[in-house]
Length: 373
Ligand SMILES: [Zn+2]
Image (tube, rainbow, N blue to C red; front, side, top):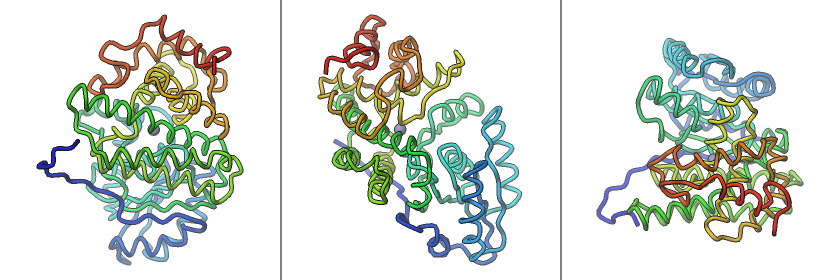
């Protein structure tokens, strides 16, 4: 429980617009957050499809409010930290009042970091619903790690977006695999909250009942609609987006990613780390986290087979083969996961899991070979 005498302070998005043709509401949102006709806006976007969405749908809406719009493309190549530092210089010279980020994870992460450095707000316009970063104050593990190592500072919690504009029509056109990954990131809240409770009981860590229940209800929301999600209807996409936004808010309330990220995330971060070290292709964040949730649910003594069933229903990966990652790397990730964020206590404890136990874990849960479910 959070100390009742402790002063709590958190930031959450001021406006959330989601539904069909939500992008049309951008001018209204910009005016509500105080944008004036002479204000400057940086439109941050990615390449190809994302760029086309930004230019064809979002750019004309920005022009309805101001003529000072600078378009900046984020290209995932080379050294990300150097790219961000260059981007900061470029964006700073333009002196924008706000950043509008149109895209997936890396574009939104860039907006969070640049907005943090320049002390300005940002709006997210997600083009897919593959992770809970669309409304959260957190950035990806690898970027956070690289920023801290290269330039110092704590990047674990930044500001959440001042507004989220989630257009269901746009998100529905993204590959289905991304929506299924979003479901993996959502189901993870079941084990993340268990880990948080464990850390609260064993290590005296602050625990917010409200943030935890918001994260859990987001996971349950998609579990109840598992049969409908692969139909890719407006309602199913809306459910996933709503749940992901709920998780972002849960993190803001908690003041950390705790309600949404436990050992299943450490496992995924470990896979990302190993993929750079050994040169294999990682799966999507939500896909790795989903498999991690099966594994950590087993360690927690939870009904892990229900998590696996859910992931199968939404057509998300449940095996090493479906992740496209060799079993030996999953085992390696399991054995090093507890070292990824040593301050984050989870079911993996202070000393982690042995290689032998890791092999047993991936076999008994059917992540490799036949499961016993
Ligand atoms: Zn996540």
